Image 1 (cartoon, rainbow, N blue to C red):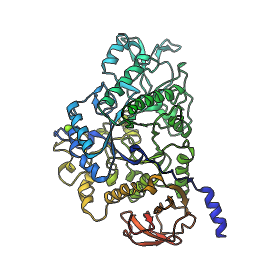
Image 2 (image 1 turned 135 degrees about the vertical axis):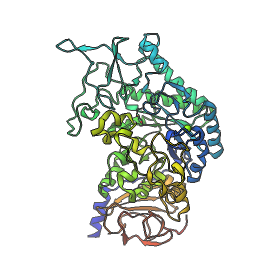
Image 3 (image 1 turned 45 degrees about the vertical axis):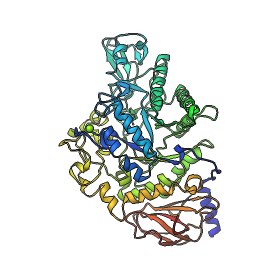
Length: 575
Ligand code: NOJ
Ligand code: MG
């Protein structure tokens, strides 16, 4: 009987082969840490985080074991979308500091051996940028910098937008400007005008933006809103999605076949890759491209590009956000891990995102008890780990009323629907300690409120406690330095409906097993289906509510797990 079960189980598993010994590059072995600058640390008391604040706190990243930091936008901006509406792509917004402050931050990062990655936001600019102002006046070459289209008229002769396309932040994606007697396209807020990539001037302009920051020594870019770069030149209406939960004004109401992931978008990414690779050719240092591509899996994978024409080093893997939640069982986890690994082009590098500034906190999506389990997945599955600031201490969403909501995605949705769209809850200030404003700012008013749970939930307390999310996180980052985690094979195994397990094995090295009870009941499982794992295992690190401590023994064939308990097991008491 047992033999049959193993065969059945094996059909469910991934067997990703070990990676041959070779020197992995920095972007493959580093953990990327996303800093949302407005919320990290305020150095000048205006209630908004800034570059000097980040520089002061880089030691935290070092302490955690982080290898690279990605900064959400720091450029000159009217801040309608909190920096994703850029008025000048080659200057720092005064709220965040100056170019000199940027240099200082960069030097500090270098001293600590931390790579610095910037957010590149190519799809749109602020409607307050010089480019847009000139485009409005038809001053060349800016005339065609944006997607301007003549109006249509209905049967009564009323002016209407050229088609049914919708903004991600609600309502028509078209805005009328009397000055030009035309509509312009905005995939996001009205104040975020889409750039026209059919203009060779725009293509060159944006390459110059990349060159500007590369020449200043940055180590790569996270590229924003990649799928939106090009649109159907025929401006065809998009079909209705049929999604029952979406209102007609909401983006989900349509299927985005004419506004997202067009073939030319892939080509543009490949051109940017060529540009960063040319920089690499100068000194041998890789400049990484990480792509924000929320899209169906085949469309996402195509952003890796081909061997001859590579695209991004990786498109972000958002599956642990989009496909799973607190109700998902072990089979769903198994399928989701497969979905990335099995669809990824051969020889490419995976990555695992569990949170960012657009997604509710891990603790709020999965429940606080699963924070350590999710960090174990993100850090110990093959590929790069990515951490959004605050996830290392298990920060939770704050409740923010509609009248206090500042995110345009929330405000546009109105008081009835804002909670479905607002990203304010996951953007509250970092919780450093239990002093005023959690040590984030001395201001009486911070741009978003500090979560009131900060007296208990903060970094200082977690550093002091013998067991904490932060201590688990630190240990996971240490484990990532093991060859087994960097290069070992992967085998996944849903050990029961509620228990998900996987192993990492590398010949001659200590194996690593992760086992997570996703359910709310005690579970008894055996992990005999995992190949090359010895019977006697020891706990390397356990989730914080586990009664097990590091060094405790566990036998592979008979494991009892408490509700939500997550364990990293190895075969030696110390690695
Ligand atoms: C994705 C960013 O992560 C999000 O915060 C922003 O609103 C949109 N792109 C538009 O730039
Ligand atoms: Mg400030």
